[in-house]
Length: 337
Image (cartoon, rainbow, N blue to C red; front, top):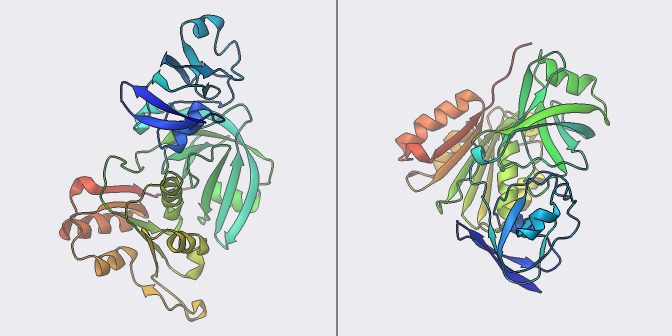
């Protein structure tokens, strides 16, 4: 059986099935309620039941005390609706609404998808979750001090693991360690989430994604988030690399485009070699966008990659009518050894 859940003071609403928690139903509806552990232990998702009835589930007494229950509070990660429900709670609508956290992660898998790209799968502690918006990034904290920043490549609904795409940077201390010495089961420390590169969900403009190399990582997270939440805005994905190996997950965006009519995918190579046997688009990735779109005034653009690509796209897209406030970017820079 399904029930209607209404949030105050926003007035937002969603449907919750009787066998799913309020938090699961909210996240599936694209509504970002605050949470921490997702197993009733931390209390970060505590919310007030203004009207209706819930089953409190496995909420632990130290996170939801008897006094809390008597005053009408519940933990959204455990509570299940037993009638239509009205909740009083805050929503995370922007990056500033999500607390930055520090936690350990375990290296679960290292998948070398190209000679210079590794896809890392990191497992979070069983009792903790990292809430983030699709497109944000985390810091890896180095033992000797300092940090290295990488975008999260998975969507927020898949929050038991983090996926990170790492490109080998010659002389790069962290990336050379990832490629040369890092082992599965190793423990790392991360801090996050950070960054304002995430989808503007209050807009209905068609979207153009421009990714250079591993700038595909946050684009992947955003696209998978929109698919999960059934966001049907037209989306044009342009992924640029020097050679064919630089498009290190080629089948994934092709599958998105094949399965979802509102998604289009255009791969672009700037220095395709004869061995690449490349019959697709060539040149700079942002120039491919301009070849296809003479007027950008009605679009939103999300660009991620090298600073030179970001700067060129910002300048040239503005000349094609893109409003300054509709250009969102995340420039990848590399720390020296």
